[in-house]
Length: 49
Image (tube, rainbow, N blue to C red; front, side):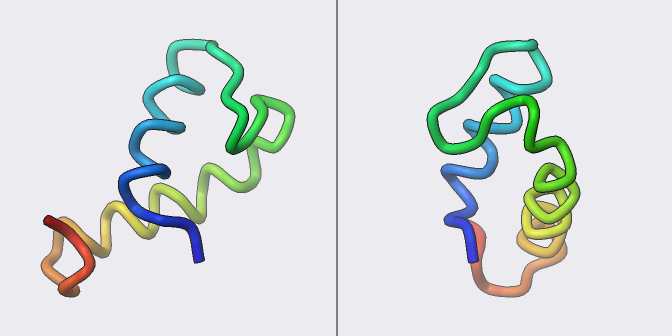
């Protein structure tokens, strides 16, 4: 499971159209998983912060 911090940083880059070593723009389907993890964390699953 991707690290949430890495996910957030990667998503910010990808959303700005910047390729990221952790996951290229071409791997867009992975973004859904990252977003889900971030959303989980915001709901307080204990993985955030």
